[in-house]
Amino acid sequence: MEAATYLASIRADSDRLVRAAVGDLHAPAAGCPGWTVSDVVEHLAVVYLDKIAQTRLLREPSPWPPPAPPDPVGWLTDARDELVDLFAQLGPAAPSHTWHAPDQTVGFWLRRMALETAVHAGDVTAAFGERGTVDMALAVDGIDEVLEVMLAGDWSDAPQPGPDHQVRLLAGGRSWLISLTTELVTVDRDPLPPGPAEGVVEATASDAFLWLWRRLPDEAVGRRGDQAAVARLRDWMGVVTG
Image 1 (cartoon, rainbow, N blue to C red):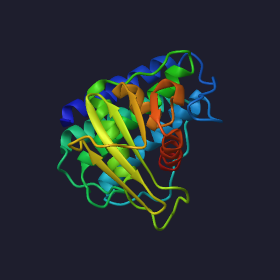
Image 2 (spheres, rainbow, N blue to C red; image 1 turned 90 degrees about the vertical axis):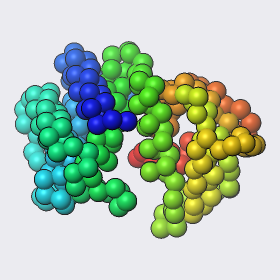
Image 3 (tube, helix red, strand yellow; image 1 turned 180 degrees about the horizontal axis):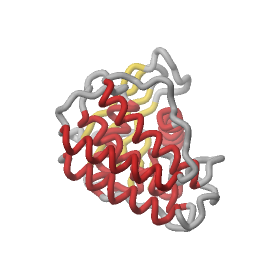
Image 4 (cartoon, rainbow, N blue to C red; image 1 turned 30 degrees about the vertical axis):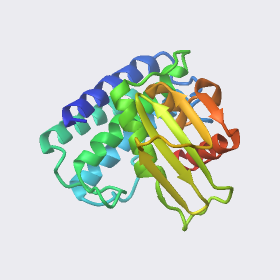
């Protein structure tokens, strides 16, 4: 997606989050067990400030995190404005420190922050009874990110014991084939021909994205085939998304 699209998403979703949050900062945020709405707001402010610092310093900031001020909503909006202005000024090709070795650019954080904001906007609006939705194009991009950047790869340093399984995810007119073993996960996007898989998960792009981030229950998506395979993917996503 274009940098301008990510920036617009960050601004729109953070505004949506703020409009909901001011209703009751002490309301529980079910998507983040044990957190209140205020905790989500403060967390997102710290995340924005961290990415600003990593871009300016080209390293992780230390000491960290900064102390929270009395007004978490104002802190978030100020941090959001600073982040958006900085990233718009620098552009996606500018260098930044990131946790993903293959991509040390502002572009990595543009994508990550747009998706982080979308997830947490849903956490806050859900606290007031509104089911979260994510724009289809952003949700498909978010599925790509969480599966290919966060899940796929060598897990030998943190093995996840269990049976090997293959799960196909169908969403937004796209297909992902996810192969899960104890120490290795591979993701094949839009494989042709489709081929079999033990378990199949099918949903709208928004619901599939939020299900992968464990913000929606299993009942929110269609599940076919071997339910143990689907459960294995769900367990893996708990590890990936924390």
